[in-house]
Image 1 (cartoon, rainbow, N blue to C red):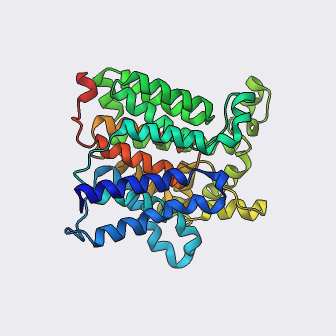
Image 2: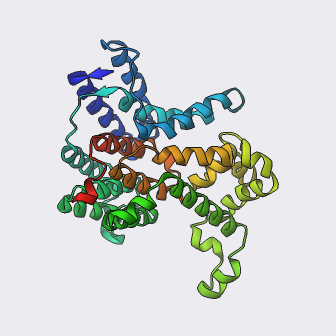
Image 3: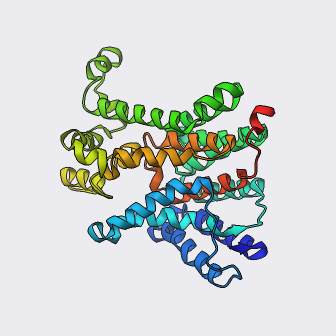
Amino acid sequence: MILNQNAKILFYISLGLVLLSFFEVLGGPVRYLKYLVLPLTFAIWVDSKDFLKVSLPSFSISFLLFIIISVFYLPSIGISVFKEPLLVFSCLFPFLLIKNVKIDIEYVFNLTIAAMVLANSYRIGGFVSIGGVEDNFCFVFGAFVTYFLMKKDYKRALIALFFVFITLKRIVFLAVVASSILIILPALFRSIILRPYILVLINLFVLLLSCLFVLGAFNEWIFINFDVHPAKLSSARYEIQQIAAEAIYFDLGSFIFSGLGPGASIALGTESWGTFVSLHNDLLKLAVEFGLLFFIIFFYFFYKNLNTEQKILAVYLNVTFATDNTLIYAGVLFFYFLLMYTLKEVNNEHIAAS
């Protein structure tokens, strides 16, 4: 474990590296700064008195399973594909080691606002002309909205919501709505919905809908009610996801038990389009690459043994999986792990009692 002052130093340096990785204006290599979190954490860990000691918070288990199963595929997939779980581990690793660190979330929130403004200052015309610019900071501010609503800090929740609107990610709006509904629900209904097996079933249902959508099951209804091709409703992701869904349909055995292996979803699209493409659907990605059995295990442990507030934040992130590549947004995951870490000591019935 990394304790006290060393843990605080590690956290703030890691936070700085992650925030800098959002600065696309500085060039492509800058986004790889978040990779430095892993060697930095390891170096401080080796030098600590409690070297080789780690903690395994409940919020880390599903991600560790994702990393471990990817390691088993490594001989066949190569390091280029393994960079995805490596990025996840880079931003998770500090939260397996730091202990006795009180993180000032309000201060982190202010730093994040400053970083977002600086990172997008060159696109000021976009803010003025169309009211915003699309940016992955949106996922971070959506998580802050959920966090501050749970803490009844409505002023900061409103500020975070403002930045969600101007960074333009539609799925984040839906995720914020879903988490907000859970916050205001009566405790009894919330406790039923937030049971891990219920949330697994919901994820399976959304996965089924995603596959049926791109396989054409709703085409006629969409034409009648919206007078557009279904691809118009999916921001040009329809064809990419259709290829993956067809791979499931024609190879049900692999889909159920083993999947097609890490990177398979990207390979399917690349073979057809001749260029690197992502599914923009992490639910479909997990099912195609690792199989339905792992999909169920992943989402069960995604919620297992979390307190109520952590589960609500987990729902927020889970919703974004439906239409985006959140699993490879390591900077976003860093903030998710950070907020989960700060919520781990919260009483399980905090929201219900408030």
